[in-house]
Amino acid sequence: MRCPFCQDAENKVIDSRESHEGSVIRRRRECLQCKRRFTTYERVEELYPLIAKKDGRRETFDRDKLLAGLKKACEKRPVSADQLEETVVSIERWLQGMGEKEVPSSVIGEEVMRRLQTLDEVAYVRFASVYRSFRDISEFMEELKDLLSDRTRERKPPQPAGKDG
Image (tube, rainbow, N blue to C red; front, side, top):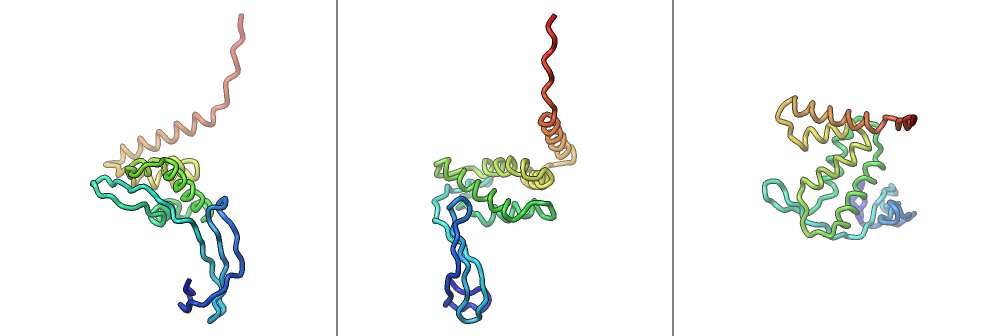
């Protein structure tokens, strides 16, 4: 592992910890050349399904691309880096749990939107507006109306049972 500051290959591990429920090992390292510290993450190389794009192309799953999309949607929102990382780890587990060799990108996009809706509604709307490529403002407004009606249904308190007789 090269130092990100001076590019020297000699460093030592100062501390190691499990994170993300044991699926990742976080290591604090110190460069022996410049004495600066940096963090690395180690995870098992997972076998992910191929992602089938809308245009027919196939590409390998890219966690960094997923994380970048989530970061963009959550820009200037009260969503922490840890919450974003947890969401990515959760989606990775979900993908692996499917046991499929190939998954349509639309399935992943819908799952990302489902998770964003509970994480941050504004981020959800941002992601949906790009992902669903609304043709005009009326389609966008329909999505917002659906979101608001879902929110209203979730917040309604249960109605008391009616009196008999």
